[in-house]
Length: 351
Image (cartoon, rainbow, N blue to C red; front, side, top):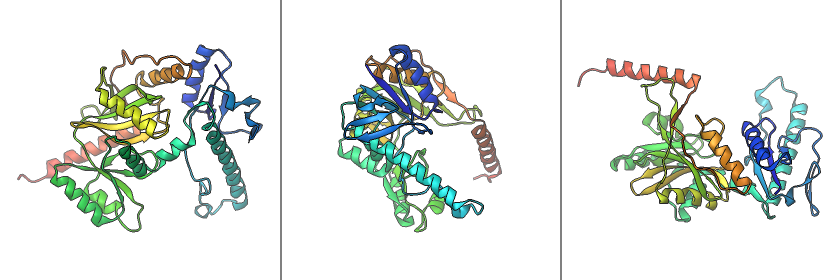
């Protein structure tokens, strides 16, 4: 069995996964540096796909990490905002990055058309890039999704929030692309974010129920975490992740696996609320964070990936305990936020 890894050399997940694959399969597990350092030999043509002497289209499985869909035409920086920048040098480096990205996109797209298990290809990243389109696509596939709108119209946003309030629901928002947490959409957010000079954002009604993130590989859910919001009973706590004990509701595990399959993904995570009428999906992540999960959760997911790539069943998520994810910066911000809230309540006149 030939298994390979395509990821930047600095990837922490790449290091962990590569070590586990080598323990299972021996030392012949090539790691192809997706940053394409000088000296890398690559080619895509009718005769096949070669990278440093390896025929990638003859591998059984390839795991891709650190790749994301982007528009290679748009520069990564604006030299107009850097008066001291040398435009000719900046433009040259941008063109070099453009060509590297173009090759990687072309190569991975070709690999989607050959019998290689690819985790994950460009089509899956493209489907997950525009979040509103992503939700609509899953909804057409028969899954429960958040009834989101994408708008920058203040009137539309106000009416949407009022309609949700009439049903006893809050409204949450997030950016229309990229990785971003859903946040409460209050009046001050509406006043700041809505306008013809602002880009549209996503709005969706909140659903009653626990917020969960399911991780699935090849349509099978291998770990589901329930997320607790921060509170001031432990200031060093940003989030608490609690593994959902098996047996989990079958409809939830089926929805997570189906969401990834409909998105063209062999691996990823699905953010949803376990609502009273079933799971309601809010996001699908084509390249979820693993190494920053607390406790042994990241290690478990890495083992699941290594086992699946090696053709073995993933291990059960036994013995995992709830754990907080800490952040010094956010701990301080929470301390300030809680102090402000206490001050406001203390200063408020009695009703």
